[in-house]
Length: 348
Image 1 (cartoon, helix red, strand yellow):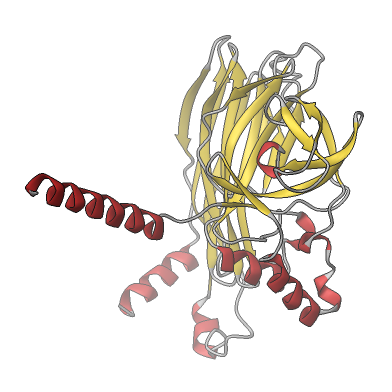
Image 2: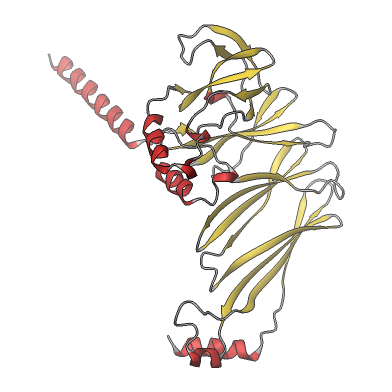
C-alpha cells in the first residue's frame, strides 16, 4: 500500500512540474511571410501536401536549397496604413490560422509553388530571411538562411516597408522578443549550421571586400531600431575563411535624442584591411546662448557639434585570419567647449 501511495505522489509531482514548465516557458511562433515572396527550403525530404494539415495528401517532397514562392495571403499582405480598424480585425483573425508544432516551433502553413508544382508546406522548413553570397570566391552563389520567431501568433515578417511606421512598431513590440534563429549556410544543396548569436536582425549584408581579399567573404548582421526621438544600431561582422564563419567584430551606435548627442561609426576598406572609425559627439551651447535661454524652450536649441571621442580600429588580413590594431585619435577641444564643460560642473 505504501509503495502505491509513493507512486501516486511521484506521478503528482511529475504532473505539477510539467504544468509549471508549460506555463513558465515562452512559446515561440514563426513570423508570417508575405505573399509572392521567394524563400528557400532548409531541410531534406520536406512534404508538400494537398491541404494545410498533416491529414493532407503528400504530393511531392522538397530538399535543402529548393526555391519556393509563397502563395498564401495573410496579415503581412494587408496595407494597414489605409484602414487601421480593418487591420485590428485581421490581427484577431490571425489567431484562427492553422499552425503546426514542428521541432519546438509553432509554424504556419504556406501554400507554395515551385518547379514541381503547388501545395502546402509547414513554415518550419521555409527560410524567413536569406542572403545570397559567394562565400569562397568560386563563382557559385550560396544562401545564408534563418528563421524569425516571436512570442505571439500571427506576427509579421520583417520588411523595410514597415520599418519606420508607428503601427508596425506597436504590433511588433506587442509580440515581444523577436529573434532570428537557426542560421544555416546552404552550400551545394547541404545545410551547415552557423553559430550566430540570436538577435532580431533588421538586415543582412555582404561587404564589398573581394577586391582586397578575393577568397574571404565578410558579412554584416545589423539590429536597428528607429523612433521619432532617435535610434540605435548594433552590428555583428563575420568572415568566411577555412570553410567556416568566424566573428570579426561587433559595434554599437546610439542617437536616442538627436538634439543632444550620441555615437556613431563608419566602416571602410583600405588596402588589405577593414577600418572602423568610432566616435562620440555632443551638441552644446555657448555662454551667450545659455544667457539668452535658447536651450530652455526646447524648440530653438543650439547646434554646436563637437566630437568627444574618436577611435580608429584596423582589422588586417594576414592570409589566415584578421589581426586587430586600435588607435585613439587625439581631439583638440576649442576653449568655448571647455568653458561649457566647466559650466556643467557648476550645475551639479
